[in-house]
Length: 68
Image (cartoon, rainbow, N blue to C red):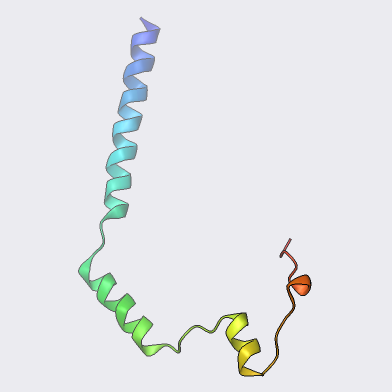
């Protein structure tokens, strides 16, 4: 009997989790419009490679170290 109750509780928890997750995945049109407006207003993102090219320098492959 306790296995049946445990299975029912597990199924109920999964249904609630899926319902909550689906609510988080919904993109509201206002949020999408605000994100697009913020992206259009901000300056373009410059990579480190672009900045070294702008200064007329190059970084040899040996000098690229992992971040960790």
